Length: 198
Image 1 (tube, rainbow, N blue to C red):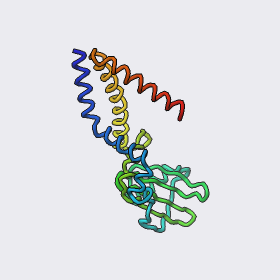
Image 2 (cartoon, helix red, strand yellow):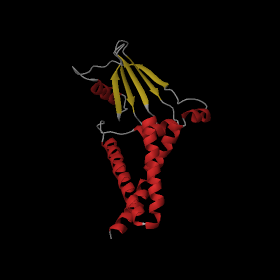
Image 3 (spheres, rainbow, N blue to C red):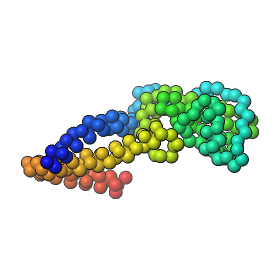
Image 4 (tube, rainbow, N blue to C red):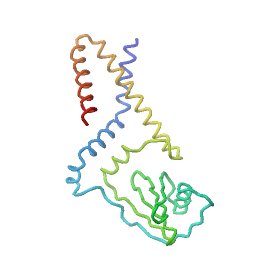
């Protein structure tokens, strides 16, 4: 009974995890072969291009931090969504990275010049895959972002269950134990070499 349950769990987890595995595999391949992809795409990842500049008079609440200020700026520009923000040390400018999966933007507010600059990052498959690969965490106050973070946690747990159920199935197949043991030993040895040597 347990064996049947583990086999079905292994099977259905593999089917369910397929989109995540393909995304992480493709994005890792792109990052691992960055030079070759630069050659294929004719250059490095695209740099932001100017979308528009405008005068911007902002009045922020007393003691507002970069996050509060950025949320106010994005709301006034109708660009609400997931973001991170920092204040630039050299001139006090507020730099907002609006993280949209298709069209990310960088918004820079310069209080000294009362100017806001909105730059758009052009579409690039490599950049999109890297953004999806690196997207994680519960630091964003948006339900959809939390849902993605939960799915990543589920993926991690599911992969551990996938490995455990695979080990169980291997051990049950007496004819495969010797070759399986060699595969396990080889994988651990190679991984150990990389941990020490790199």
